[in-house]
Image (cartoon, rainbow, N blue to C red; front, side, top):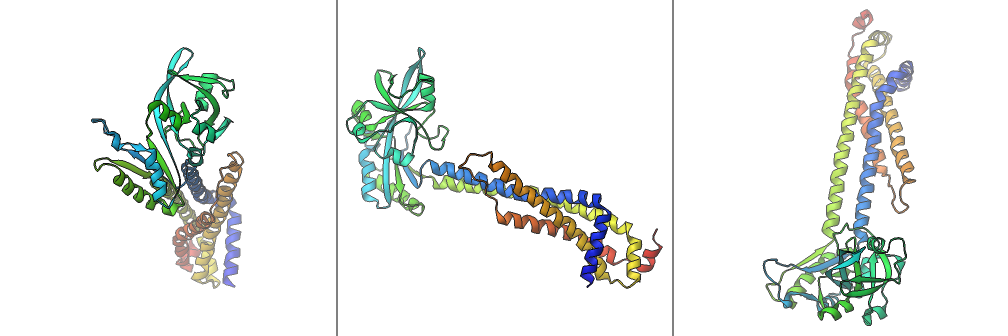
Length: 399
């Protein structure tokens, strides 16, 4: 029965000092809300970054020749369509391949020549890169096989050259070459100019590049593995294949998105840890506040404690009373803070794009509650034990 009595006394004491209890719990509210929000922000940012990277293309392995500026590369070192086709024929884990070559060109806009990137792509490019067609269409088989003088342009280039007019069906001049625009596109996930596609790029069939240059050389070719588990195996097999098909001194970069994804996850985890540490500091400060207030409370209620001990209250009952007060302050603050931490993402979700979800981790809610309550009990222990050790005779004489 002494637990119920201690709980009643603790609740009555908190009611008698509502403002003090509320002010003491503010630190706990901020700390617990911070834990929930920190984990939510970290999970959301991690999911967003990873989705952006994966949107470039899933399970990709790409190969490119390492070029030395101090010396010219022999033609035997260059990647070709034959290398790309050999990779698909000799490596069972590869389900799709595509390649491209690019040339620096210029386009005349308002009487001024602007640099653009002319990219010749092979079959399978759209399947792997998954470009979003804003207007018009992508190349069909006839375009690829007949070397049709058609092209796709980025939205930035379309806006610069054609303004508000529809670019589809219009001619675009690059140097001495003229192409008909059949589509305007953008990347599914922006690579900020770090991929072959720049802000102002033109894509044409690779068969057309080969016709103009007389060479089937590729700048880079991509291979798509059957699944994430096969990416490392495909990477190693491609390295061996390139060495077997080219001179020993030729050097190739065989890269995957795995390292980038791993780095993104590591960064997100580091961010989460840093933010949780900051939230823990907030809880630590709130815990010190609880201890200070409880120590003041013990001093103020010394006479009350003496009377309770004089009429038979045990030290454990006195201690449990003050521990319950500390628990109610920290636990109540934790509940309010968690509700705030959950409510904010729910509201923010309405303002975000439909494809971006804000995940609320149940573990963060549980962690916030446990840590907040533990903080209150830990810092409430010293005042509670001090109250339990008071001598009744000295307490009754206390003014």
